[in-house]
Image (cartoon, rainbow, N blue to C red; front, side, top):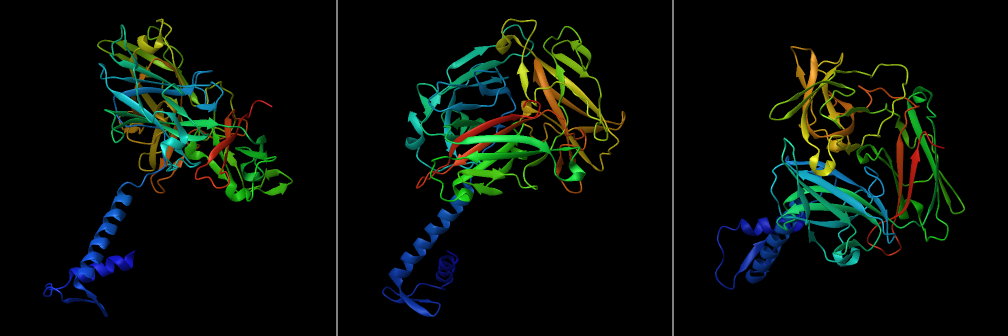
Length: 458
C-alpha cells in the first residue's frame, strides 16, 4: 500500500506531461502514458479508501448519551426493574428501554440493534444474518409529564418486538437516533442475547496475594463445554467477568489454567483478582416534601433544589461496615404520585465531598449507573476553596440512587475506584460471567453462557 502511494507521488512530480503517445519515466522503468494515468487513478482511489476507512473506524460501543436533554435512561430485563439487560433467545423475555427528553414536545426517534463481538466491536455482518423482520423502526410510545416543575416527554420501547427481533445470540448494541439517520445518535445501550450451551460453575475466594487478601475478591470458574465443537479453547471461547455490570473494569479470559476432559478450569493465582471496593453510597428523593437520609435541605421555587449532606472520604477507613445498596443501580420512584414515569419530578442536587486530598493532586468524580459511570465533565467535581470541599450539581429525577466517588490522579491520569472509598473483601458485589463462542466457520461470536455470582449468596 505504501509502495502504491510512492508510485503515485512519483507520477505527480513530473514537470509536464510528454506528448501524446510518449512515455512517463517511473523511477527506473518506463510506463506507457495511458497506463501511468490508470495507475495514478487507482492510487488515488486507494488513498481515498484508506482515508475513508480511517474516518469511519469504529471504537467499541458503550452505554452512552449524546444529548444533554436526554435523562433518566433505564434499560433492563422486564422481569425486574434495574436488572441486567440480558434475555434468552426465543424465551419470550424482553428488555425495556425508558428515557426522558427535557425539551418536551415530541421527537421522531428511530432505533435499531447491531450485532457485536465480545469486546463490543461491530461484527460487520449483514442485518439479514442477525435480524428478523425489519432493520430499524420508530419509537411510538411516549407520554408527557404531568404536574411537574420540569416538563419532559417520557419514551419507552420493549425488545424484541414484532418489528425488531434478534435472530442469533450475542452482544447487541441498541441505537436510538433522530430523523431515521444513524449518524444522529441520541443514545446507545448494550444488550445481551443468550443461547445457553455451556455449563458454568464459579466461586469467590480471598485473594491469594497476602498483600491484597483483606481487600480483594478473586473469582475462580470452570466451563464445561460438553459436546460443543471446541478445537482451541484460546480462540473458540472467550469469557468476560464484570463486577456490578461495569465493562470498563471487566477482565477478559481466554487461556484456561488447565483442561480436564471437557472442563476448562480458570484458577490461576494472577487471574480475576478484583478489588472488593466498598458498598455504594446512596440517596433517596422518592419524596420532595420531607428530608430523607443524606438530605440536608429541600427548597422549592421555580424548581426543586436538594442540598445533600457532605460526604466524607472513606479511603483510609480500616474496617468494613455493611450497608444495603443496589450495586450501583438506581430506581425512578415517586411516593407522592401514581406513575413515576410521568409524575416524578426533577431536582437540582448539590453534593459536597470532604477529603484530605488536594486539587493539585487530582480530581474526584461522582458516578453511578445513572450516568453510566462516565468520567467526564458532567461528573467531574470542582474544588470550592471557600469551604475547602469538592462540589458538584446534578439534575436528576426522583428515585433511589447509588453512587460512588472515583479519584483520577493528576500525575498518572489513571482512575482509582478505591482511593476515596476503600476496599474490603467482605463487600457485597455482583459478578456477571459471560461466555462467548465462535462457531466453526462463523464470522461472529455468540453468547452461550451466563452466570450471576453474588458474593453474599452461596
